[in-house]
Length: 116
Image (cartoon, rainbow, N blue to C red; front, side):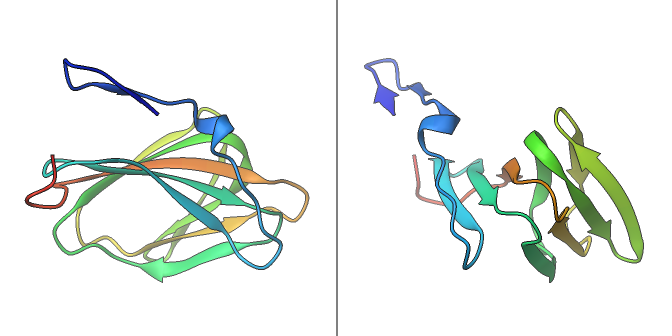
């Protein structure tokens, strides 16, 4: 990650890519009091269990691969370039297709108070 005097940061997501056959790998990208961003790297057939964020809206961007995102009782097939918005408190999860890896970026806000 490159930082500068102006305060912005630049990174190359695929340089951070790591995969594990045991479970998905999460990498923190950016963190401030307004936003949290992470990359999530999945092997085929891995998943993130259904969960929710009571105070944070969330945006997913699929960079690579295919899978299914669940929203409460609905399912949506996603693939590269899909972008999904989820309001706070919506139960959601991720399941990767059995013949594809999956790279997701997510952005949640608000972030963590006290982080710049």
